[in-house]
Structure formats: structure tokens, C-alpha cells
Amino acid sequence: MSQELENYSSITPIDDELQGRFKILRIVAFMRWITLLAGPAAILIDDYIQPWLLRGGYPSILTMEDLSRFLFLEVLGISTYIDEEQFLAIYHHVNIVSCFLFVVFVGWVLFAKKKAVIAARDLTLMEQKMRGNI
Image 1 (tube, rainbow, N blue to C red):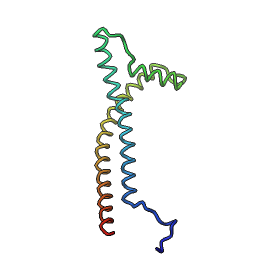
Image 2 (image 1 turned 90 degrees about the horizontal axis):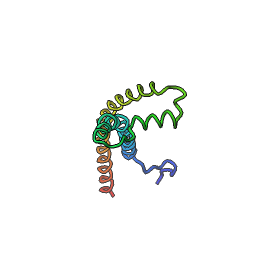
Image 3 (image 1 turned 180 degrees about the vertical axis):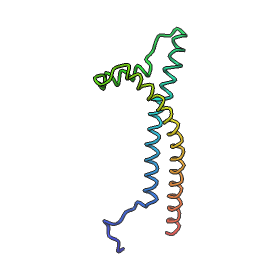
Image 4 (image 1 turned 45 degrees about the horizontal axis):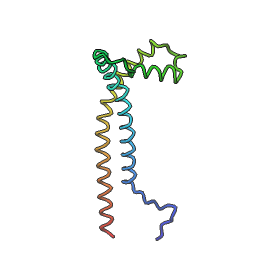
């Protein structure tokens, strides 16, 4: 064995690619869930579920708009920079942009998952070849 120990690495380029692909998949999947909550889920709760509950005679519950207003304006202290009307205008724009990004991230997750599966398949094929040579 003429190879030096400090130059030896058991991680192959294919293994590195697999780890990178799964890292991208995890990040994009997390962003998909964030945009789901900020976009379609918030619109569904605020515009459809809340009025339906009020028509049914149930008490008013906390909406995503109220929760966002409390978190951003009072907890994070952004109220010193913008007032409540500006926040509501920004909030509705964020909902629309989040809906669009949710659709983009769903497609991206499908693409990233396909690439990660291909990288995993390549790694297993390489490992099978290595075991066959032993």
C-alpha cells in the first residue's frame, strides 16, 4: 500500500453526489412546506374555513392573518417600521407569491427526488461491482 493515509478517503465521488442530492432534496422539501403554510393553507383558513365556522355559529378562531400580524408586528417588533395597513397589504402579496412558489417547489421536489434516486442507484451499482471484484 503506497497510498498515504492522509490522502485516503473512503468517500467516492458518487457517494458525495448522493449526499449532495439528498441535501438539496431536504432543503427544497422544507421550503415547500414553508410556502404551503404561508400561501395555500393561509388562504384556505382565512378565506374559507373561518367564514364557514362563523356561519355555523362557532366562535371566531385565530386566523393565519391574525397569527402573522401578532408574530411580525408585536413579537418581532416590525411595527416600528410599518403600520398595520401596510402589513396587511404585504401579507396578501406574500400569500400570492407563496402560492406560486409552492407550485414551483412541488415540481422541484419531484425533480430532486428523481435525481437523488438515480444517484442512489449509481452508488449501489458501484458497490455491487466493488464487491464482485473482492
